[in-house]
Image (cartoon, rainbow, N blue to C red; front, side, top):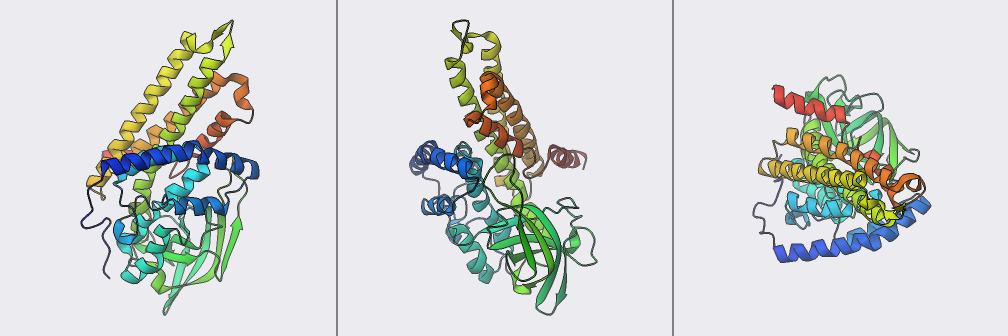
Amino acid sequence: MTTAPLVDADPSPLDEAEFAALKAEIRDYVEHEGERWTQLIEDEHRVPAELWDELRGRGYLSLAAPRSVGGRGLPFARYLELIELFSRPHASLRMIVHVSNGLWRSMLPYANEEQIDRFVKPQVAGDIRVAFTLTEPNAGTGADIKCSVTRDGDTYYLSGQKHMITFGHTADYLLLAARMEGSRGSDGTIALMVPAHGEGVQNNLMADTMGVIGTDHAHLIFDRAPVPVENRLGEEGDGLNVAVGGFLVPSRISVAMTCVGLASKALDLAVERSKQRETFGKPIATRQAISFRLAEMATDLEAARRLTLHAAETWERDPSAGAKESSMSKLFASEMLQRVTDGAMQVFGGMGFFKSPIERVYRDARAQRFEEGTYEIQKQTIARELLA
């Protein structure tokens, strides 16, 4: 099977003036339209289909993919500058942009020409929705996955469960990692494009989450769900390579920059509040305890931004490397986000506990503890690289 290149063979140089205009456009979008969507999603606890349509129409779902499959072809590190902006309004808006701009990385290197036309290009264009489907209720997210397939001729039969699958309930296809029945370890894993509401698939919407309100999550039960062999990405044994190498490493870096964007929103809210809130006739911004706390928050945030960009540049130079730096950036940035949002809540005092922008940011920040792996998973990855 011929595998497609990860990026364009001859990418055009980035037009800095064009990129600056795009960045300014997105900054204006998140500060105005983005905030209106934020209020609607928080009020209705759902992500309207119209938001997907708007983001697709503006070209925001195809920023990072190569031009050869219909994307804008932005370098990864420059794309992260935009993810930082998209992370400032509602977390569900950012999630749409993040997932849509990342899933092609798993599919493209392993897809044949027919699969590129059937899955990759429509996903990049936003014509189909694909959900990354790895996590299981009773296993980790690696070589211990239990979801399994048996093969009969030109059909695989899929059995098992997946849960906490972001956009899994509204997806058209699941980019799913399973294993050949009876196999052990990563060598027996397989990656399939599974119809999300097809035969043998019980697709259940999970309960609301604390933050990232409106983003649907699915609990999926497969009872010998038939999947054509032609829907397999790569070969039998490539499943975890498709899932982890193609998506997870750059996705962790993108999540790290999400933490930076959300923290910058929290810091801006805290700075504004510190100038407005008065105690004993003076703004609390004049109190050394508050001003020093803000200074620490800003320093923490900038350190996370620089580490994240370093991880992005490392991965761009060699997509087979960067796992350690990816986990370092996600670990540090997600811990930073907790510190910064905690500090912002202290600045707001009791008012921060009421429904408000800082209360929403505080809730959304908690999701980053778990997205693309807990602190412990990141430490395990870093230690494994160090001790190899």
